[in-house]
Image 1 (cartoon, rainbow, N blue to C red):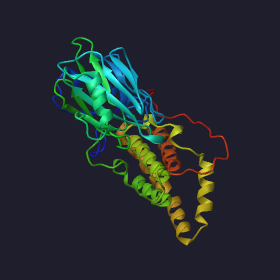
Image 2 (cartoon, rainbow, N blue to C red; image 1 turned 45 degrees about the horizontal axis):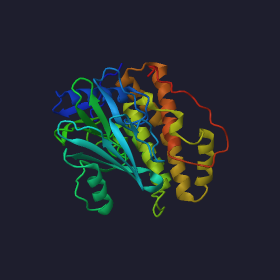
Image 3 (cartoon, rainbow, N blue to C red; image 1 turned 90 degrees about the vertical axis):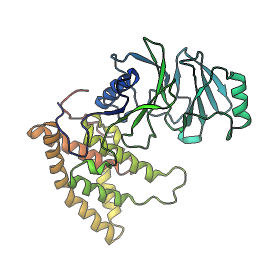
Image 4 (cartoon, rainbow, N blue to C red; image 1 turned 120 degrees about the horizontal axis):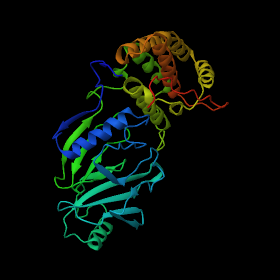
Length: 346
């Protein structure tokens, strides 16, 4: 059972805006289900609760959609293949608007998505001709533009009305959701998963944050690494993991780290031999680690009610995972896949 978290964090998703709307109520059901799930991100893999009074008619359910062509559509949408992606055209109008989603290929990172709400008189042929002729300055303004995660489009089981969620940029840490209706064409509510402005490190005890800063220093700035940006990607993954360690520790898994502990320790020993500054930083990390583990165990005992040995067990595993997530060394051995020791099955 969750008990009060630190003052910088919410213990559950929080809705703001016109929260009494049926769309917002359904969106909160989904948000709570995703928050409580073992999904590493709050938008995927999707776990849609049975209690929702709407069904998903267009969206991406998987976490990795970098290969493109990730949208899954029901009969409510016609898929129109294009030279650089696809157009998903709603077969019918909902509340005076037609939902259209454009899926455009953007290279190795995947696709980007625009969502339009078109007037009923806009014809398919005219729309397609206009955006092909004027791809950067066409006549139609998207409601959601250049999104790296596709919007989730739902249809109410009772009224048949349609609404959708912008789940934010995948780089946002526990990013906010914005809920739209086809009729309004604007957000009617938003859902927040953690305190605004708080970084992942600020959600954790000070000793853990201190260790994280030292690990980040080892990682380095990652300047001039081209479009792949491997250092930035590692850093972002570590930040996502820290946020889950603070607010959703049941969602941590061995997949969050590439190397075994032995491989990371071996790699850092070799790295530290490079110069005196490296050696000093490595020694600081070794000294900071026990205090971080102890403080994390106390945090889990206070914030989640884990008792004695269980809080220590979870803290030891979570901190080890965080430590390893900062590095990618040449893999030399098969990793042991230790299960998450969190006491509640999700």
